[in-house]
Image (cartoon, rainbow, N blue to C red):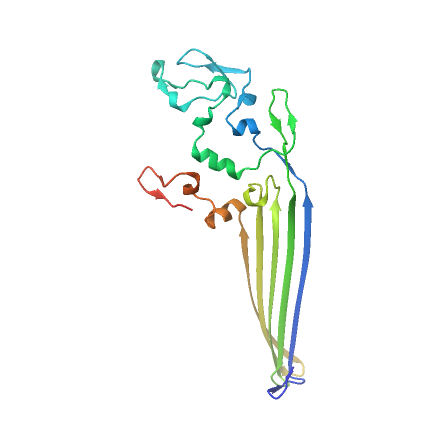
Length: 251
């Protein structure tokens, strides 16, 4: 290695550097299930079945699987049993849909496909979206060797590799996807050595290495919360208090 007018390391100092990157974007059109327009507006009649699972102790009416009950009608029935009255037709009135639920719904995509309707009328696979699972693999390294003398040679090298990808099975667009998550693995590797020629037939070699791996592996929903885009306040709550009176931090 030579630096004009500053350093002449001919036959003494050697330098090597390498950088490379691999990129892959695997796309697709996953199918997922979201609430129907009727369900978003409180009509949950499609989830009500004819399968009786019990009897309401408050009014003696049968309880069916999938039935929705009005929390404002909670009372104590015979033998101290708490019970509620079912919403007629399994439909929640629009004025009973809370601001919190409305804010949640604003984050959820609407159905864009007919989907598959089961025998009891429940719709599935009614949302199709475009998804990309990128994979980036970047690595670089450098090494410097120094011939200190005919008997002593030293070197130092550094290698870094970063593997970034979107992993998992996406069930919604990436910003709200609970099934996929970004992964970022970063590896650092340092190495240094000293070669000492003791005699024509004797060589002493000393090598010291160090490596570290960082794994950033978290869902998009957590990343969104950490960025402040999703909070209790956005949903309509000022603060949420634990039983001890301690407020949960607004994220």
